[in-house]
Image (tube, rainbow, N blue to C red; front, top):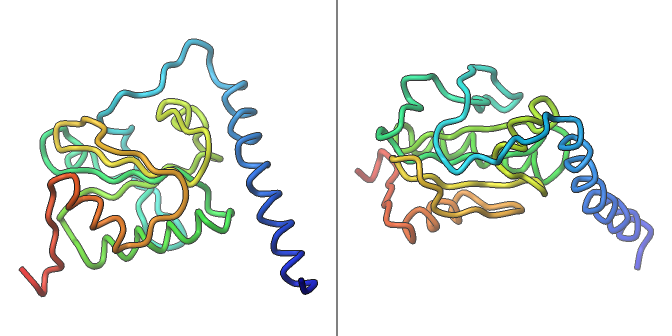
Length: 163
């Protein structure tokens, strides 16, 4: 093994250990008795991340019954989370208006991370238009994998050029 690969392995291992500890520490400081959300829209906000992905969409778009929703919980600093920010930006660009794409920064909003039941990040949750949780995934999903999962869940999305 080269020095670079050893350093990379140590950094990855530290991240795997640090993220659950960070989430556990933030849960300990949040209000007791808070239950993770079963489903439904997250609180409304219009903050943007560095990659142009809304941290949440407008209140009108989040009303139950409009569109399916893809939520990613993470930070703007962990490497896998940064990858997911790029994926979300690509989803918004390639599939505008097909589904809602939300980002929850667990560092800035630990109570919301608790509400979603996040224990490890990045975490993605797929919701039906009626607010039911359909699937959750921990780790990185590429754009094609997100679209394939939507198809598996019964939602077929095509980029605007193919519609």
